[in-house]
Length: 168
Image 1 (cartoon, rainbow, N blue to C red):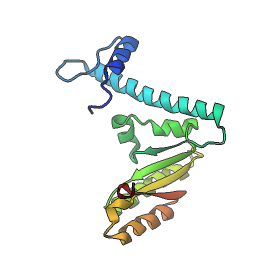
Image 2 (image 1 turned 120 degrees about the vertical axis):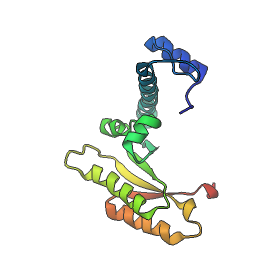
Image 3 (image 1 turned 90 degrees about the vertical axis):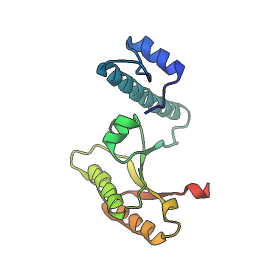
């Protein structure tokens, strides 16, 4: 991915790790790539932690939520969202899982997967799990949206949020 390559970030990474940032046209080791991704993930998590601390110090009644990619592994590897740890650590009160798909079966599978993970016996998540549906994709076929809504609720989601870019 090509975001996060600002000069200040590159300098900080190289200063803090002693490694070279993997820039286009340069040759770096696999370890440098992994260090770069781990460092960027740590920066995102540090930001979430700092927001949590600020909320607790200034507005303790405020609740922190985040919009999350539905596949934890993809979120971790490509968007640097370590949301499984964020939930385990109690950094969020609400997880809004972005389940944006026209595919009814895929959307149902995502809702079931996320909700099942929450209900697992080993689950330590106390947060609300909200399934976010892409309402804008169903402007001409609202029945598909309501089907996804029902599937998310039947899967055990704590709620459903509708996202509609065309209404902003």
